[in-house]
Length: 272
Image (cartoon, rainbow, N blue to C red; front, side, top):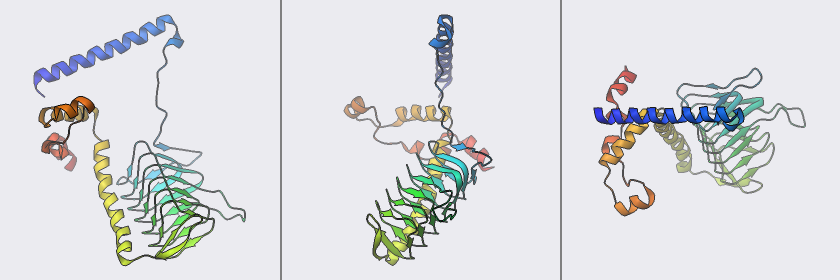
């Protein structure tokens, strides 16, 4: 962006801020109740009682996720958009390299009818699919929970076991090593193949890498995002009819593939 572009951008910012200030002043003159500032009350990390979430610096927590109370998330794990991990009456532990995908819910039980304490314990390199419900369970390392599955209090999913998409696993059920359970209520379906067991590990690795991309994008400042918009308009090859209907560019230019190409000086400082 040249000197003229920066000057126009700065002038536009001043005009917008002046207009907003005048709007607030006019509302105040009419009466305090005519103007109400709308603020988002969403908090990604929220303390509760004397407990607060503990998240490893290398983990990714999406800005629309909610981690509440006694929640621990390990290195390289990812908590995706719309997830809720509510550790209010007990604790939630998520190991390393685990991904809990969009809109999933993880909760706990203070105790069951027999008085057994039921935290939720999720091991390392676990994959939990979109919109799963995990409640007072133990999921061991390198297990897989499919999309929309529900695991009730006291369930144990052993290492390299798989819960199929949409399954309902009843209370105190144990799913043994290397087995697939499916249905409502969930029952043994078959043994996992060697390829499927390898897929579970690969899935966790894929999500570790994907989370790094999302973390970098979410960390961008407002100015960086606006600068990218300018570059897209400048370099994108347009289909005029497509753009006129949707206002979307068909392809991202090579100049935008890596953040280093956009702000190389900032990237170098971050590495140092």
